[in-house]
Length: 510
Image: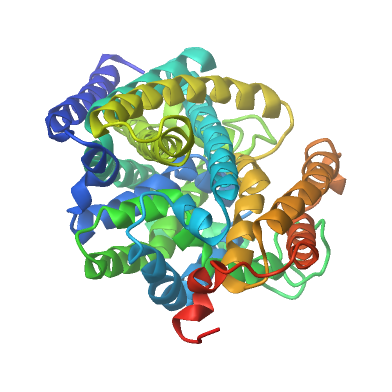
């Protein structure tokens, strides 16, 4: 890194903070701070939906996955497209018409205040840990590119993201996402362009090398993709199982829902969701293709330039820090910062919303004036930023030396706790007889099963015997579903309030 690179990065960070501070003057109440006054149009929301959940690991994990294993996992994105009509017009419309602040408000209406607060706590813990993964990804790259410690890298990104989220609220989150999306995409095209310029055959040459190395879409009979094994890394079965969850799970994710609730009407939501979902596989493919470009560079153009056996995450980091020209390198690092910061700001704002609306305002300090909750929201944003930095250090220490790719780290962290919330919504939306007591029993029963699969069968298992990271949630989900439903029957079955909030009740009277 030289002076020009540092100038590019510094300008980007300064613009992000200034934009957040500029939008801060509009934050006069909690509806503006959390939902942008419910006045957004579809295009910035579509970009924010993409940036918030996709970009957090895209710059490192997706190219790293393609470098190591190819693009097969990208097949899973088709499940979201297949499920789009049902997810959008059945489940998301159902929640949008309720004019929610958080998705957990639905759980209070369907079950009880206890289930609402419990699910809010699970969300806070799950997404807080996810912020640690995001900062861990940042530390991996910036430590190599800048030569600074991982701790310093975590603090730089964590502090800047928290500052503009603190001042600008949801307005800052969405509009900085738009700016960051441009920087994000510009950086990844630079990687592909640098390799394509030097490689005979250009972009087509990159794809030909990937195909010869079995790093495209490995779906053949002997690829293992069609196996029933629970230890095969990627098979078709998680995607088929995931199709069922894709029908409703995106609609119950607080980060998605909060952006949709910021739209001025449901037609704006439809446009935002459609563009975001349909564009996702195409955009993802560009990031995977960048990993194939780095693979071609180090294994065909310049073999021996990096140590043999270097993983895809590290190879991509090395390419950014060593091979890009001056100025371009700074632009790419700015793109990486954009990817990470867009997710941090989105998650911080959603965590603050859940804390204030589901816990603080509902249980701890009900009935106060809006100005009180506005001050509490900003304080919560600051504290969440501090905890995010601590989680980043924890993830760095916990997964360092385990030899686990970043894409798997992300899936493991998110899957551990979203396993519980997904089953709560599944039983609540689709069954009449599940009640609050039975649901809590089901969640408790799932804890030891989740601990067994995630720790004993994966994290602490030798690499050859690790359970597929895409199948880890299967056993806990089955236990929670059956135990929750059976226990509900034991505790008396359906509650009077249930009929109005089960999705079938929109068409069939009970």
